[in-house]
Length: 159
Image (cartoon, rainbow, N blue to C red; front, top):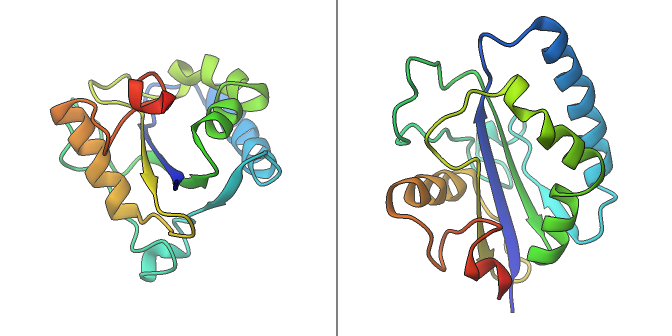
């Protein structure tokens, strides 16, 4: 059957107000604490620990995305997590604290021409790696959705 991997990527908006960024930091800390208690959550990569080819691989950035419009891709937020299935990941992303944060995302993030997330299935017990998330996000941005890289709104997310 398999489990689900979720990779997210966003460039922080350099024009964001400092008070908005303080709100982002506060909400982000709350969300990171809440995710570990979420139904269906199976784990996440830690960019700080995974820099050295840790359990989730070396940290990587999607530098092959469409135009960053002069924004520095190093000023970003990326996450990598593993979920029991699409339904449990969707429930966390679109409910509660995370839903509140999603409503404010344009206060914090640059609106780029690339997708903000990508999903794919992995074998039970497998651990996704950062490079895989990057490659799938770039493929989604360039080629559109497929069974190998999709979004919450795609037909593959309903399977």
